[in-house]
Each structure stands twice: as C-alpha cells, then as structure tokens.
Length: 167
Image 1 (cartoon, rainbow, N blue to C red):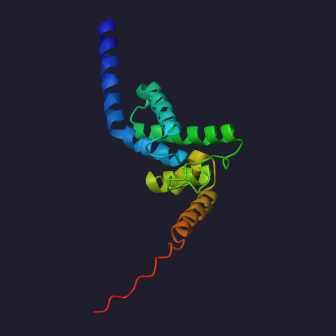
Image 2 (tube, rainbow, N blue to C red):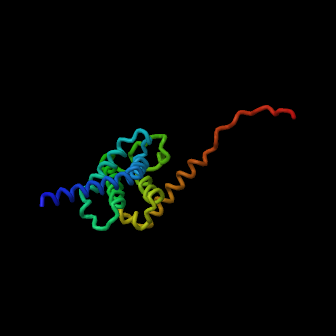
Image 3 (tube, rainbow, N blue to C red):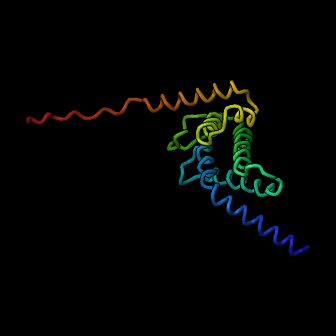
C-alpha cells in the first residue's frame, strides 16, 4: 500500500513537472501582461504564477479530464482581479510600468484583453469567469483596443530637415 502511494505521488509529480515545463512560460507572459510590469522585472507576475501553479497542483488529482492549463489560467485571472481590487481599493489604481505595452489600460481592461486576445478565451467564457455580461466584456474590450490603437497613432517626432543633394 505504501509503495503504491509513493508510486502514485511520483507519477503525479512527473505529470505536473511536465505540465509546468510546457505552460509556465506562457502563463508567466500572460501574468506579466496583466500586471503591466517590465518583462525582466516582474515580481508581481511571478507571484501570480506561483500561486496559480500551487493551486493547480493542489487540485491536480481532481481535474479528471479537465485541461490543467485552463484551470491555471482561470485561477491566475481571478487571483489578479481580486488582488488588484483589494490591494488598490479598486481596479483603476494600479501603477503599471511605463515600458509595458498595456500600461495605458486599467487592470480590468488588461485582464479582458489578455484573456480575449492573448489567451484566445471566448467572450462568453470571459464574461462568466469575471462575473460580467458578455455585452460589458465586449464594451470594455472595444474601449481598451481603441485606447491602444489611438496610442499607437500619436504623431511621430518631427525629422530634422535635410539639405537636398544635387544630382
């Protein structure tokens, strides 16, 4: 009996290690986008990833055919949303790193854009995960996308005038 439990624990650990080897990089990138930290200096994103993977490992045996990546992503998103709300008194008071591509967005906008466009989660699934209506998710997604597009359309700095070279 003891040997069977040890064998089961070893197999569980190997399966989870294989999952982490394949999914941790993408989950860390998603967490870095959520927290709007610099890619090389992202302690909040790493903490989110660690908590998400720990939660996934804790329920590993109960997954029963569910996608562990989906479960880890769900926990990452809900943990980010709750942590941002409680820590900053609201989803709009997070200080993103200026180098982050999603820096001009609020945490809720970042969360919806990351889930919808980076992770490819459907509108209805995102709405269900966040407890919002699909219309609200669509509106927030549209507003965030518009913000990013308008940011990229800012006029480029003027080029210094050059003298024409006679040919």
